[in-house]
Image: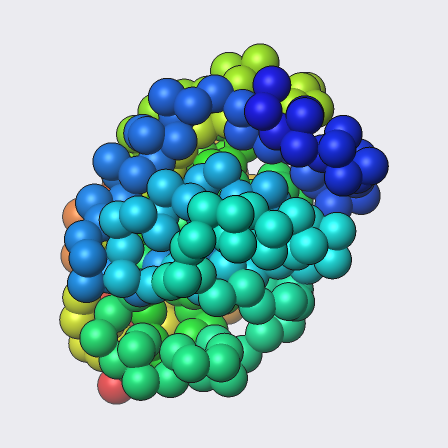
Length: 283
């Protein structure tokens, strides 16, 4: 494969500790590009560009690509590729995406005001930290995130009742996720132990409707609800609220929830309603 040849020529081997599993199926690169819906006005943050096979295709379609890479060996390979292909609209940023403050990324401060997209073939261990960073922590949210993640994780993120879970509610509070394709493990090299998936995450706009106080209460309620997923919701929330079970039952019924129901059966919208009604009861 092309990637194997490039790495062999540069005497570089994938590092397991960095979760380096390179996408070698070209038609899936086209699928990522299609899902990102790029235009010549787009700024793209690519996380973990590796040898640059996806980077090159992003650069052809976007205004600018900011490629964040931690591995110095890959940075050297990427530089050579960009020079050989005479690509001028890619800026390589050395570092760990988890530690780089978005507003401090060189040349991005003014560009991010006009919106940007995140595209990444993520090491599976980075899925949670990257999603949290761009949905919860950064002030300027991306217009869209297109990520390759572990199949099982993608399914958990996009779950609906009766398979809702804490991860699904947490992501769906901030964004609308959707699986666009599945990737057999044979599409990667070295081959991982599990299949992957392409997931599109579109942040909800506007987000300012939820105050910090509301967000805090929302996640406390959700975490309490899923503290014992197999137990009845009334028992989990009664313990969390430390209130009379009759009061909790009234609160649940007011929000359209059966007291004997389980957390996995509740939609994201129901969790919002529970939070709004709880704030009302505590005034």
